[in-house]
Image 1 (tube, rainbow, N blue to C red):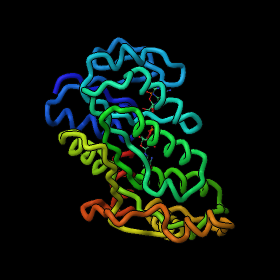
Image 2: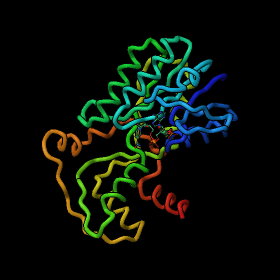
Image 3: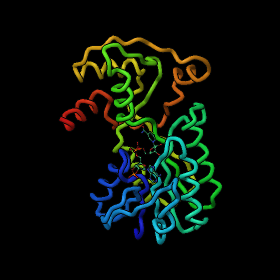
Length: 251
Ligand SMILES: NC(=O)c1ccc[n+]([C@@H]2O[C@H](COP(=O)([O-])OP(=O)(O)OC[C@H]3O[C@@H](n4cnc5c(N)ncnc54)[C@H](OP(=O)(O)O)[C@@H]3O)[C@@H](O)[C@H]2O)c1
């Protein structure tokens, strides 16, 4: 296909998507904020709103993976404005499973981005994924950096191997856009406390872990699995297997 742009192609998910497209010998351009002379990259900033029109010009398929924790909706709206309601583009947007039920400000932004896409008139596919294994690893590493750590142990997660999310993006991009939302999640559902126990076992670290309960409706939703999905990818590696591989690669 001619003209593919990947916003966020330098990120965790973006890198996996690029690997898959490389394996298929499909060419693409990555949008990044960094100035570079690489012909496979274009400099654009979705918040500063610079280089966006140039980046989208002539593209037929746009994977929109770039994210800004505070201004995700603004970034998406700037992308949509640059596209100007073109009906010949397929916009593939990555979102998060369960965003309707969790009142995090980032999730509200993602939901508003989804709504802006739906109302734009641009043919789209939205893929909602559960958290990536990398995300859980980074949260646990951060919260357990000292000998005594605090963790909301009862939060339920269904983390997924990010390559499967990238594969899903490729799959949906090859279909005619039907303005649909797809969802996918990992093979196992674990409490954050169980994931932390796996993390301690694999890293060989020793920590005292205190539970911090998250109160109210938010806590209840997180404990009751609002971040999980029934669209489970059985082939996803579990957290332990992923972490063992990841740490071997990182060594
Ligand atoms: N992490 C998870 O567990 C998870 C789960 C489900 C869905 N998602 C969604 O998946 C997407 C990718 O997540 P990720 O974890 O791969 O993200 P990431 O590693 O944090 O990468 C973020 C990307 O956004 C780009 N970016 C940030 N601000 C930008 C701006 N102003 N203009 C243009 N590009 C900008 C960065 O590119 P440069 O630095 O090169 O400019 C980078 O490539 C996000 O939309 C996220 O909501 C994530």
